[in-house]
Image 1 (tube, rainbow, N blue to C red):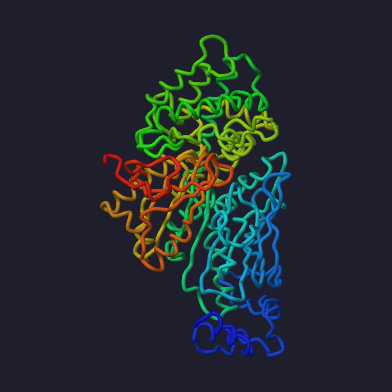
Image 2 (cartoon, helix red, strand yellow; image 1 turned 90 degrees about the vertical axis):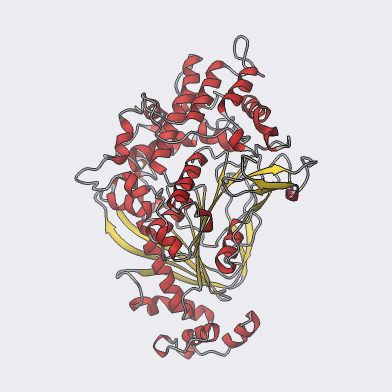
Length: 593
């Protein structure tokens, strides 16, 4: 049925179920009809609360609000203070917020799972779950942002879900107990954050869709990055029948181990302060590398590895060949001959970088979490904010500000406040013992009967059930991600491939993005349509042999295009290619070719 004929039909119906019958060809269900006086879209929307009373999968679920919006502008607040907001034109839709699993936590806090759903009048029969980020605790916008410069999924006619993962930053933040990580003192809140809330919210949203449209979604999708990427992995592994296709970008599927790596990296940079006899403070941590120093780091990596893909263009396309001996040699070529000065790197700085590349280990050399591969995005503004903080001192190290309380409260048993203020968090990380303390992420006790690793990791290579139901999984990941190592993602894919006798690419593909940082940014062609590729794979059976990435306006080369190749293939320049040539001048090849 065309969109035009659908809406001609919709205009003549007398109730909700009749609308669904026009859309789906299904017989009418008189028991769910809305009275003829309530045929308008706004009335259908506000009637949902009463209609859902006997249709919720979980007893006690209820709608907090149901509001109908005519088509019009929608403002998205800027994530950076002082930056302008973004305005989108959204279609007419019913906006719903709901709540379920209300309870009192063992820590005395009031908890619940809150969800946010938008149901467009011009529904395309599809459903998208919009993943969360960081420590979650936010309801999310539920508009389906699936890529820079691309229409939102809501604008494309998808029904959209977002959720807070079982705790609210507005309610459950406790300043003297880790702020927004305070929910880590409650075992069930940990479990909901780790993935249990995903099924609950999904089933609630699908019940709303079924009641509003009179039909289940023809296709169900998930799209998320970072913590959202971990959520996508959890859905594929734990709830494989819920979604047809998943984009799990930069997946934090080893969250507790990655938090250990944040402490490791902080210790690496703290070593520079020690060598320079500077006090251990968050402010001083930001001074361990100037912007000029970071630029020199990037220059050294490019000198060592840029040309390996057949073209010197500011990207490390042949990332397999960018080995530590090559990079360290070039870093040392820029080392200071005497005292530290502008235009050179100190021995302590080079040692810190090598330690970050190696990743956290025990004193016996046992790897706890993979290190970060050398790439052109090292030293980018986003990279340094994660590791040491902004150069102007306005933004502290995210590794410290979020990493320390996450590790100590959310990912360790028993949970413990890591210190007072940012400098207290820093001291906690610097004193972290990599022989003794990692055991806490696997520990249990009488109150926390499941370890943080069991609850909050989603790194299983067993995707048999997801594959059997025809599920497809796309995993983009920046090679310069400063927090979740793409080396861990590559190792996971190798394990999945082995478990599937070399056929993992038939249902899951990892796409390393040279130069890209965490989810976006960096000197990279970081604008690409992974969601469109997923839909084509699910609905048309067309597996993506590459993504086409475009460099954004903040990159060194706005508008440049490159192929983003599925691991383990790499983009190699065709003979005669120039640095400004388009993606067609490159071919995805195996590293041995």
